[in-house]
Every structure is written in C-alpha cells, then in structure tokens.
Image (cartoon, rainbow, N blue to C red):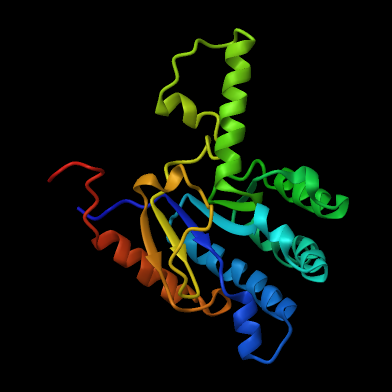
Length: 233
C-alpha cells in the first residue's frame, strides 16, 4: 500500500541565485518565484493534497537588505491581485502561519483579505509561512500553555498531543513531506516540531525552476519510501 500524502511543505529556496544566473536583480528572482507559487499550488490541488505550506518569509529574512525586504512585502499584493480569482474558482483556501504584526499595513491588509475571502472554501489549503520561525512557534506555544495553566484553564499535564493544539498548524494534518529546492540540505528553522517524522526531499532546481513535473516526481519518491515511525515492519 502506497503512502498517503496529505500535507506537504516546501522551502522555496534559490530565487536570488536563479536571478544571478539570469544576470537579473534578486527581485526578479523573487517575482518569478511568486509566479511559480501559482503553478505548484494548482498542481498540488490537482494531486489531491490537502495542505500545501510554503515558507515565504522567515523571521530571519528581516536581516536582508531593506530594498529586498520592501520588495518581498509587496509580493503578496502582486500575487493575490493576479491569482486570487483563480484560486477562488478552484475552491482553494488561503491560510497563514507566523506573526503578522510586523508587516507593513498594506501587506497585512492584503493577506487578511485573501484569508477572509477564501475562508469558506473547502478544497486544498494554501498555507503561507510568513514572518515564521520554528523555534519562535514552539516558544510561543510553550508560553501560551504556561499562561493557561497559570490562569487555571487547564491542568499541568502536558503531552505531545495536547501541546500540538498550541502550535500554529493545529488545524492541519501532520506533515508528511518537506521539500527544499536549490540544492541546500537543511531545514532552516522551518516546522521544527512538525518535521519530526516527515520525509525529506532535497532537489537541485532553484524554486523558479521547480516545475509541476518535478513536484510530481518528489511525490512519487515519497510514496515509495518505507515509513516506520520508529517501529519495525
């Protein structure tokens, strides 16, 4: 029996290096990468994936040059102005994990609007991780749990299942597969709790060159793997 795949996460790496090879500015790579989000989201939806989580902007990305960060903050508006209608037609729901309070108002507004407009859609969830960091997520979850114990809302009897209710991904199925593009072999503070028993696939292609065909090959590879979750078959 082949592995069932419900939740896929992708570290969309290599936009800047892709642009450099094209003798273009890094912003051109980010633009092309945002175009590819649409292609991969549609492919994932057609394959019956329930949740596609994309690492769009990490808590560490604020360290980049201001002009690059400013451009990245404008991309949600560009993306949703072009593709929200199509995503709506395909019954795709937009979600976000991370902390929105640091975003410029225009960025926060467009993300909030996309989430609101698609909230009743019942198809695939396209989940953007923005201003997101795995360590930060676990820290916030621990703080929220401690506050609930302190306020008498719950008993201090934490286990893994209860802790997961405090994570930003609490409404999603467990992560099955994490993909990273552009040849880097690390997870860069992404979904640290959720990746515990996920399968990992690293591909050489930069994110703008990560086609639906390559995506389908990674899914096929996932389905061939022997997932034992610490046990023995």
